[in-house]
Image (cartoon, rainbow, N blue to C red; front, side):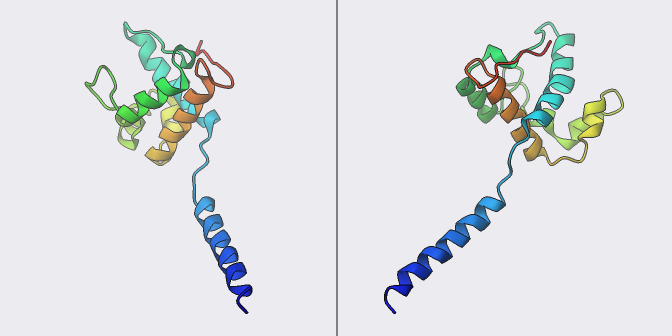
Length: 130
């Protein structure tokens, strides 16, 4: 009977781990690319800053930027530009904002982060937004 107890414990822990990992969100870098190129890049092109291509930073630099949550030299937050409220405010002029209007903010932020990581200077597919 004592040999079954450790085995049962391993099985229960394995099932618990599987249930937690099943709830994790797998970021969609393709959706992040569409939003970044359609919303972020379109706005930056209109500003003196110009477009900011994903390959201008390393994966660590993008992660640091997103985690710091500071945009426009700290005047705004990154999360502000991913929020449902922001998307609602620009959806009449931006089809991507309209298309992703109901996507949860955190999911969209994770999608953008996945795109920036993949397209970073040292990412698996360095990308520009031309």
